[in-house]
Length: 327
Image (tube, rainbow, N blue to C red; front, side, top):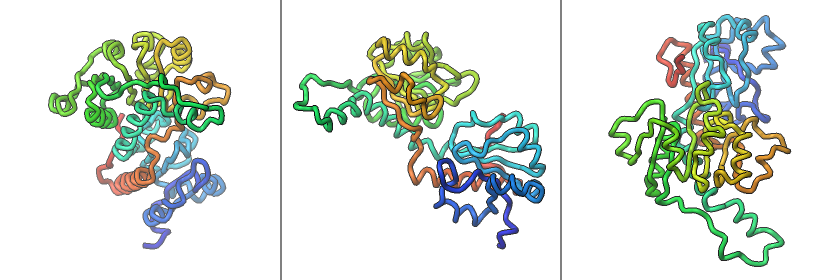
């Protein structure tokens, strides 16, 4: 098939900080005629009616009403990852544009990373590394201790695909598993991992040694964990966030960590990303912060790209769209 017969798909750019990975381009160009945002803006008149899909990688390109108005034949937007808080779904729907994401592609790696943060925080891995390599270290103190993960109580807030996979891993650590979710999972799912449903999040917070956040960011989950919720947690508890930074009130978290209201936090997400270099969270010792890398493995990122390709092709041919996001 000649390249000009392929559907025109808008991307932000290739390579660089936020561009489509260069080693994905060969695959993508077998299916699409890729148009960068720069190329589009320079040739709007000739390209606006040709573009039928937008491929969003690292939240780029940004979609607003001005862009939608300029693309009369746009049918589908495919976005990498599971979060869709960067998209205005109602606006897209009003233009008849369908949306797809890649929730299942990222779930395994993100669940693995949630466990990694729990283990690293509980066993003080970062502090231990710093001690081991410091030129000032003359001995390793015998009373330098961490906390047990095996047998501890894990509270999972958000028992979707990622949350459930965390529970599967936690079961292997013989953890007691509590969960809070909009809807209770079926009894078969619960018994498979030994999970106990907490209808009220407060009950989960009060009982858990580790609280792991795996919810989607919505108006209902914005600052879900604030001053009140942190004060309900045990003073020996650790907060782990693998969802979105805005699910946690960061000012309240700073205070809770400074005043030892909770023991520690481990965050793969913050708001903004990265944090300003003078942010108080960066000055605390009882926190681990990673650069939003829950799904950052080569295999998973390629699977995300392949899933997005499949969704765009389906959306342009009138077939059911895998991982379609519905209002």
